[in-house]
Length: 131
Image (tube, rainbow, N blue to C red; front, side, top):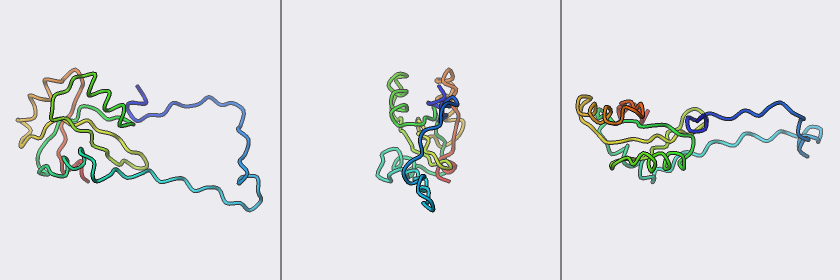
């Protein structure tokens, strides 16, 4: 479950791995951490989120550490359209949000949230997702 929620499994302390060739050379610079790739603007979920009015609400059904985990969740729960996976950059990671519907008012979104109450969804404004 930790993996689905963006967590990482921790490794137990054990023997230290041998140093790389770069680490063994005196004066060698360590490799810089690789940046997390930004979500592609051509992604269907991104295009959909960007097309919605900022004040509209959506039902966030879950947040996952991989797109595959989000896709599996949608299939397992048989979520009806419109359901989109929206990659959201958060610090140095990307979370894949599963979003359902676009509603002009909170009152319009509440029935969808209640329908999937067992999944513990929450309401989000599109404007907040885009910040």
